[in-house]
Amino acid sequence: MTRALVLTSSILAGNSLSLAEHFQAQAAGVDGLEVTTRDLVADDLPHLTQPELASWQVPAEQRSAAQRELAARSDGLIEELLAHDVLVLAVPLYNLGIPSQMKAWFDRVMRAGTTFRYTENGPQGLVEGKRAVILAARGGQYAGSEFDSQTPHLKHMFGLMGIREVDVVFAEGLAMGEAQREAALAEARQAIGGLVERLA
Ligand SMILES: Cc1cc2nc3c(=O)[nH]c(=O)nc-3n(C[C@H](O)[C@H](O)[C@H](O)COP(=O)(O)O)c2cc1C
Image (cartoon, rainbow, N blue to C red):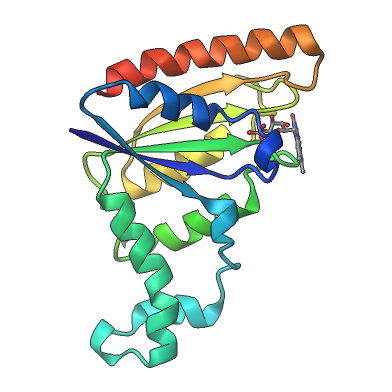
């Protein structure tokens, strides 16, 4: 059984073009693929702060009640990540970057000493045997150019934790007219269908 964790981060709710929903619908008909979904917008994680960061440094049995509550955010999200085989990130491009809700998730799961560690030779990822899929939806067209500031950033963050197998499905030019939008979505949906079969 392959377990996939789908993370959504669109603020557009009902108006979202939702490549994630397409992934879920395709996966529903496939034996051997189990999907869990986390809506990072609904989670509304706050920015990472010093007290929360500091709570991770305190051994679990020595944490105060407040530190236990703060550390639980990161602990729970890392536990969830480790319990899945594939991370599927549905990522709209917002102001040339990832949604801040998704950054707040990365700030909780990229934890020195837990998901990666610093060594004399640089950082070493501690998350083994996982792969990731990025479902990238954009109003404009950036893939393969220096203006795609989002997917290299996501790959770097995954790479730091040791996740190096990353597939990217682009749906680009979604704000560039009806024809481009329909063509891009059709292509992305087809790619997602192929990926789902390979993942199972
Ligand atoms: C706040 C906001 C910022 C956006 N910034 C960009 C941008 O910088 N570049 C771009 O190509 N599209 C931008 N878009 C368009 C979205 O990337 C596009 O609508 C995408 O389809 C959103 O995915 P979703 O339908 O899953 O929410 C932006 C949309 C919103 C709501």
